[in-house]
Length: 150
Image (cartoon, rainbow, N blue to C red; front, side, top):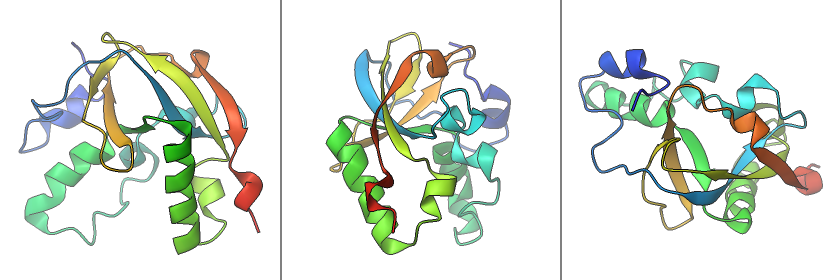
């Protein structure tokens, strides 16, 4: 399996993606912007903003954080995606719409698309994709997150 960010993984002092991550065929949900072909829809946080959260992380934990930030955030249900977005919005302000997205999109990933962590208690999991995935063609917007926009 040739991962999309394999060159970045090689620079880390840890195995990335972790060995416990597994391929899985599953319907997933993700925050996206209005245009599905917008590059940021399927870029991991570290590629969008390389300095994101790393300044506050202890040096010895930065490679694990970088590995996590090279993954795409996915959710196991629309409601879990919406609830997590609401939590973030409540803790910040409407700027999250500019950085995280304005909609929930639904798509299917397969065993050939990469590997996944197990969903946490809020339904979030990391997905490390292989090269060549064209998620923008396989995801559809199903609802707006703007209902919370002040």
